[in-house]
Image: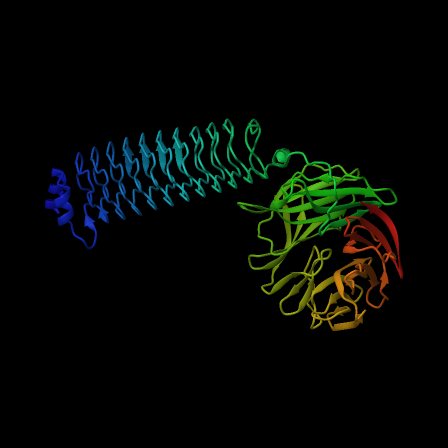
Length: 591
């Protein structure tokens, strides 16, 4: 080994490369290589250079792949153009060293300290820089995609036009750094301190900035589209020069992300949720509007017996970030709950609406799990309760919606859960054909479902004696209904056996269950019609007598003791009817 060190000291790169061992590691632990002039491609790959002294060394274009330089002193060295894939520099002391144009892909600089170094055009893709200290370093045009820099401390570093896509800066200190024109798309900056940083012209598309400190940041020309700033204190932060399209912002700044919604010209309701609070009614849906491809979450309010307004309020939330939405009536009006997809997980956004139809300040609550199905939101016993199914597990859970958090009331593992079989009641179906009803206090006893349930379309609602079910048998016409209890089926009916059935819904009002459904046309020129039936043994009857009216959707309306149903026509018209035995009365019409 002394002979090899002598060749390095002489700068005889060619002879060193010929004589170095080709197998195993090159053992140069604590070697004194200070001042060595070995530019031109010296092969130090797989070398053990821990604690080595490389001060003033010239190793330009050296090969250092998989070498270990942990704890080494590398001050004033020339390492430009080196190829050092998967190398280790942990706890190394590096000052005034030239790394320009080096390839350090996958390198580990954890806990190292770098001061006044030139890392221009360096490749640090997937590198580890955890807790690394970098002071006054040049990192302009660096390739640092997927670099892991959690808890790193960067002081006055220049990262102009650096590629930092999907880099992880969680809880890092980046105060005063220059990120002009840098690409930080999908970067994780949760809890990072960016105070006084220059992010002008930077791309932060889908970046996670939750809990980040942004005081004094220059965002002029920055693209924060779909970025997550939901838990950021934006007091004193100037975002006026940034692009914020569909960004996730705190409730007080949501309007900046979506702008001002245009007046609604055409009502295009798809899968609306409808609720009633006394004589007040509200409906929530996603409305496709101009420009093409743009959608707004719209909420229309009205009073039964009075003509509906022509326009609907728009919620200041990017519609394409909403993975689930639901609406519930409360004594104070209504509550909209949206589940939003964020880089850090799913969040619940609670939007209150008062009796005058005024949208209140939204509040964001942590959900704590990834939902596997659209949740059920209900007002029960003086509290708003959210029922959900977690993808992790999976499990079924009940939460009380408080002002500041979702309080878990109870949860239960259910590995074979398929999902909710009702949009209005927390009734869960397992893969084994077992039905379970939930309440805010407990999970009910399992009930066996009929063999062909849930079929093509289905709905369920609590009823006297058990659960009332309505479903369309697979590959058959007609509507099946049944009431099942813990001892098995108590009733089983097959209605309208020769009629094709489309949409099905069901709900309970004072323990009396109703099912509503659409009868599909039997001829190309025919129209779908709306029907209702009281369960378990009522006779089906049409909700609307107009045979020319073409119904696209039908929904039960929750919030009152009166059974209400909303029908939506193909032309966008929505009408609410009160159901009585054998007939329906119109109460409100919109569109």
